[in-house]
Length: 188
Picture 1 (cartoon, rainbow, N blue to C red):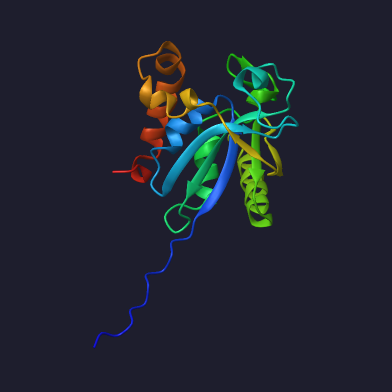
Picture 2: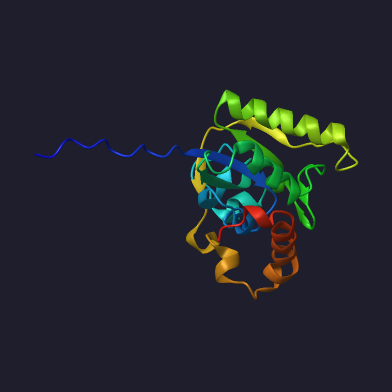
């Protein structure tokens, strides 16, 4: 007679929603991190339901280009995700990342819990105190309300289009810098 078995524990999963300029850049980096299970490019923070890329690009919907990251907090912490986030974009420029200008490119953290808010504020305060950027961080820390996945052609853009001009000039250098800085955290 067999004894009833105990089911294995269900892994914990958390979600982070981050905007730091073009979502293609963020997705390319976070896809490579251990503990990250899914990264979806999309839009958050606006007032128009189900916006299109074209509408978001006008800067009038209020949305930011973001990535929504599903991760295993037993492998990578939310704090660690934020340290990667702050290393791959300039959090000191309001509504701008390089040549990309407009509110859709703002640096923003959409927190999903009071704990995420507290961690985000601690990380920002620590980076500001350390003078890492030489200017104050202007990243918004705001409550998560809704996420709208971007159109299919935006998903896994860098992986599918590595030789496209923007990917070569903008994304590839960010990915290379990230890989060098976080080599021990890369998926095998």
